[in-house]
Length: 251
Image 1 (cartoon, rainbow, N blue to C red):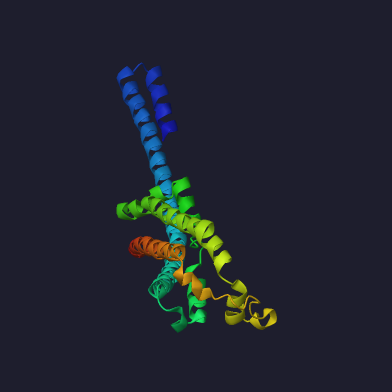
Image 2 (image 1 turned 30 degrees about the vertical axis):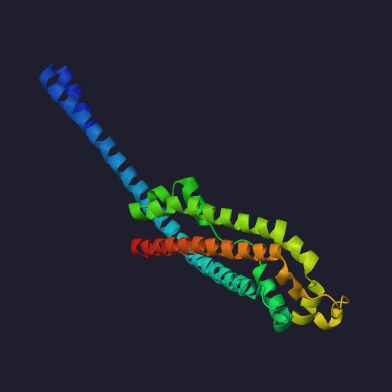
């Protein structure tokens, strides 16, 4: 088409018909502009198509990651609730007549109360989306808002875990090693207990810690910190469940 206009333009020039030449020149320019616009539109369409495909693939992987994290969070809630129940049971034993209490029961409760660790949490897909801009490709504003806010909520949970682990490692464990016979605990509660036998400190009674103020304070800290972490985990789980629902709607 442009070649056709060019021939007409050359002919009008040789015939000295400037008006017609100008008309055809303008027509040629318009055709070029239209061609460029069409090419840009096709390119934009291809980019949008690619972005939509990439966004859907990302959201599919994100959905699986969020589902796993909901399960991990629920596991931690159950662990911390068990820890809270055990520490509360110990607090109720403090000050009681130890001759009426079971050392085996106390050992079991201490073993549960002293558990530490960090929640397993997968964030590879989310981090990829935040770092590469894939989250920005998502059309749902409410979904994007939750995704952008999730890392800070996870960080709050990690801070709580760090504080509780430090309290256990720096204060509770050293006290327990000094005042509790782990050999006796292992003898009574583990499968290999028969191999090691009971503690040779026959006069030692683990129940005696119930009359030590520091032990009461340490157990109270565990109870207090467990409550905080349960709230943190529940808040995170709720956010993850909301996120999962939005992802399902987006699919």
